[in-house]
Structure formats: structure tokens, C-alpha cells
Image 1 (cartoon, rainbow, N blue to C red):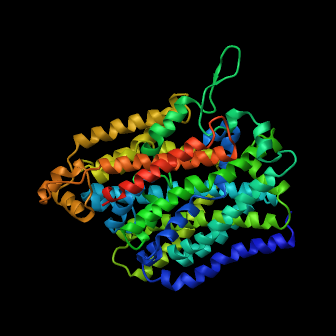
Image 2: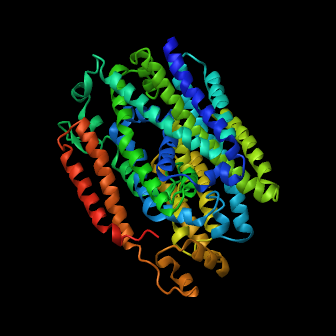
Image 3: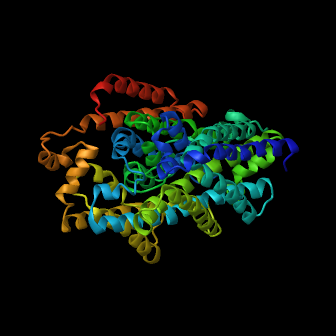
Length: 575
């Protein structure tokens, strides 16, 4: 239970967003640009921190705890692979999103495509992403917070869900994006403090015995961040922390082929919203880079260390995701417990607030204002946006009650979007992609998932390989069987966004630009940047939990890549 001190600390965390909301209410109510994009005046560090805060919710440490229990530290490649796509956004897409000048990434559809097909696609994606998928995301965040509160405070799931619903929805509806990102800044800081506190207190228990105790009591196969072969029997039986096929699916397919919130190929979603809300193109690049470094290199290890401690403290529990909440209940002392719960409340609210604002931007800008009630006043649209946050949260509460685990929802989102990623990338760099390409890439994985679920025994992540192949064949076939976008649409897009690469050579010749910038220097920079990021991530892991490899090779690789990027920065043209 919580002491009076704990409740006092927790109350401060809850009240702070409302203070910001009321300060930002008048500014947010001026127009949709103010409500959804903060009038495009965010500095890069604030926008980037908001991206990181959004991807840190109560579900994340619980899900990581479950992953480590089943597959060891190497199981985290299910989301670490997203760093490849995030770096792609830094070097290839951040500036283009800011240059496009749209309110949402769904509005981009009618900039890139034209006609009835584009209009149908825009409306469908607004509902599909803004309501259905968005509510699933909020649902699993609600589930994790409800699980945390039920274990630590003894609340039932319904009470926990409706408490989160009431707290978050009100301040988001009032403040708009400007208030969301300002609260994200403080919420992220306290969320990180909370996760550090859980890891420190859990490791400090006599049963665990610190980092040395973890290394001594758990098998090395669990502690290694990379999967490997272990010869551990007279029959030379080969064992993985995760299977080779799984690892290859993560690194070779998932990051570019699937859609997942916060890891969208080509940017998109609430990341694109932040890119479009900053002051200029350079700030869009810096914001995305700051997000990528913090997301993959700063945050994971406190969660992982706490997960390892939970394996020693609760080895026999059925629900390993709940092990993280049990650490807070049993091993975080009074006073600190309020700070930790406040940090997780902050993480929960920062994620849900972004999802609500982002989902409302689709429903209002891309559905209501575009198809239902065009020509109304900005004040009317802002009122509608505030009301739509209530609708989204209501649907998400219903979905929460049908979810069992966070990972269950993760896998569904990845499978439902398997194959669309390549379209989302190539629509910027290949003129031949049309609206039918994107429509097909959205529908094909859903049909494939139904077939796999009813007629095969395939399981995740093997399903990704089948779905990506199926979806890619479908959308490429449809692309070549249908007409390209009209020349006027392609020319207008090219002149506005000015994309690079040979994929626009035919269009560039029509507008008098017979040469387009080569993408090879940027691919080289992307490869080096990914090596630098993973070197830092793995080096920190080896520093905390050293194995035979040690941290030196990883840190050396990271430094060498940073040195290369620094000396090649002038030759890498990001426009």
C-alpha cells in the first residue's frame, strides 16, 4: 500500500498536466494548426523528447520483462530492429515530411496521389489508423497500467482503466499538441527516474545481489544481447536464445516491411506529426535523431536489469509481465513508491495523450473536415477535435477489456501491417507507386492474416515472412496493372517536396531538372549511423553485464562510425 507521502508525490504528477492544459487552452483553440501542430513552432529538443516520451508507456517495461523471461535479453530485437527504420527517417524522410507542409501524414495521400482512389484511401486510413489501430494501441497501454495498479494498489481492472481514461482525456482535449509536448518533457524525466529506481532497488535485494549476482545466478544465454549457438550437451545440441529464423525476420524484414506505431517505415504517425510541428527542416532531422538515440540507447537497460532481477525473485510466476509490477509492490520502499508510480502514471499519460491527439487529427482533419463538414470555422473544428478524443478513448476502453497480454497486441499490429512498409518508403522515391498500390498493401496482409489464422499453424514471427511476401507480390502486381498517377500530380509533388534518387528521373526531366541527387552517400551514412547506434546499445549492455566479448569492440565500432560520419557530414546532402 501507499503512505501519505507516496500519495502526495503521486498527486503532484497527476495535477501537473492539468496546469499546463489550462495555460495552453486558449492557444490550442485558435485553429487546427495550433491544436494538432502547435503552430509549427516546436524546437527540435522538445519535439524529439516528446517522441521518446510517447514510446515509453506503462506497457513497455512490463512487455520487456515478459520478453526477457521467455527469450533472454536477445528477445528485445523484436523492437531493437526498429532502429534501422528510425535512422532511415533521420537521413531520408524527416526533412521531406517538414517540406510537405501537411497537417497529418494521412493528408499526404492527396498530395502524392489524386482522384477518387486517393480520397477513398485517405478516408479509410483516417478511420483505420485513427480509430481502430489507435484504440488497440491505447488498449494495450491501458491494459499494462491496469495490471500495474491492480498488483500495487489492489484496484480492479475496470477502476484502473476508467481512472486513466478520466485523467488523460480531459487535459488532452483542452491543451492540444502544445500542451502534450510540454507535459511530455517533465513526464519523460520522471518516468526515467522511476524505472531507474525500480532497477536499483530490485538489484539491491539480498536474493539478487547486484549485477554480480545476476551474472552469477542466471545462465549466460539469457544475458547475451545477441543470439548465439551454445554447445551445452554431449550431443552438441544447438540452442538459441532466439531462433536464427526469428532474428533474421527481425533484422531482415520487420523494420522495413511492417507498420508499427513509433517505428513506421518512412516516418509517419505521431513521429511525422512532430517532424511537421518543428520550426524548419533541420530541426525535423535533429528531433528524429535525438529520439532515435534516446529510444534505443538510453532507456532499455533499466527495464532489462529489473526484468533479470524479477526472474530471480519470482521464478515461478505464470505471468512474467506482472513481475515488474511485483517488484514495485514488494521491493520499492515507502516514499520512493509514490515517485515510481508517479513516473509510470506520467509515462502512461504521455503516451495516451499523444495517441488521442494524433488519432483525433485523423478523424477531424482527414475525415470530418474533408468529407463530412467542409468549410466550417476553425473554432468548430477544434471543438470537434476535443469531442473526438472522448470517442477514441471510449472505444479503447472496450478493447482493453478483451486483451490478455501486451505482446498479444504488439504481434497483431505487426501482422496486420506486414508488407505495407515498402510502399510507405517507395512512395517518396518512386514515381510509379499509385493509390492502388497503397490500398492493396493495406488490404492484402489483413486477408493473408485471416487465411493463416484459420488454415495454417504458423505463429509469429514466421507469419511475418509469409505475409510480407504475399503483400509485396499483391501490391507490385496491382501497381503494374493499374495506371500511374496523372503527370500533373507527379509534377506538383516533385516540385513541392523535391525528392532524390533515380526513381524520379522521368518526372524531373519533365520539369527541367535532368539530374537528381544520388542516394548512395546517404545509404552509406545510414549504414554507418546504424552501426554506431547498435555499437553504443550493445556496448552499454556489455559494460553492465560483461560476457566473453566485452564492451570494447562495440564502443570502438561506434566511435569509428561517428568519426566517419563527422568527416563525411558535408558530403551527405539531406535535401
